[in-house]
Image (cartoon, rainbow, N blue to C red):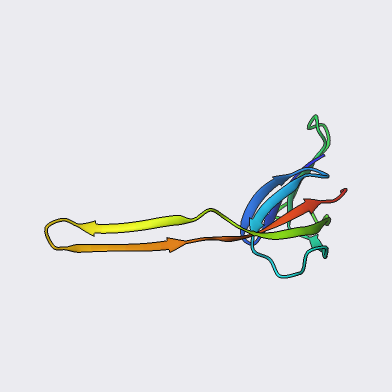
Length: 102
């Protein structure tokens, strides 16, 4: 089974028992959540495909595994000959989900 779901405004291709790293969601590790925005649901061979307009109406359960931080990004701006240099950093927070059966 394969499904395309929308979580926090982004689309992800998921399958049962797979782990997906999405933007930070509310909840503690071990909590169960329901994903209601299923855009497409299909079997492995593509024989039975259910395409939503925009959603199929199916629900997929997922379990929050952990909250993690992404890698550090350095943003460096510089203008030559004006003595302007600015460094800024960013580190995104993510939630790791384990997709249940659907």
